[in-house]
Amino acid sequence: MQRLRELRTKQGLSQTDLAARAGWGKSRVCDIESGRVPNPNLKTMQTVADALGVEVYDLLVMPTHPAERSDTVTV
Image (cartoon, rainbow, N blue to C red; front, side, top):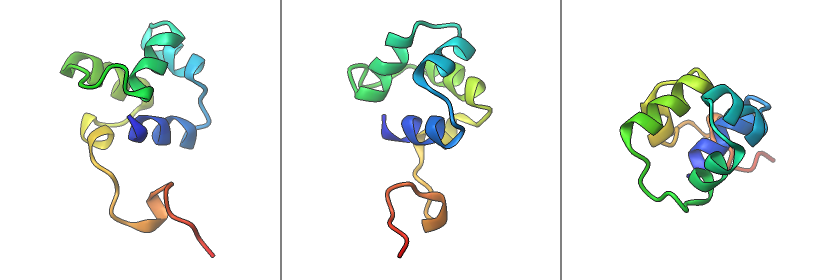
């Protein structure tokens, strides 16, 4: 889940940091980010959102404003 990785790194958190906040092992965060867990359930998404201090919606929707997106290049 690319959006999770973006939000995590934007906050300067490692996978280990996020896992600790969520009460999980690092491998669970890695599995979600890499897509090995293709459709995380709502409870998982809420746990991640709470750990990041965002809404579940923020994990699901890519921002439309270029300044908020990490996949755009500024020249």
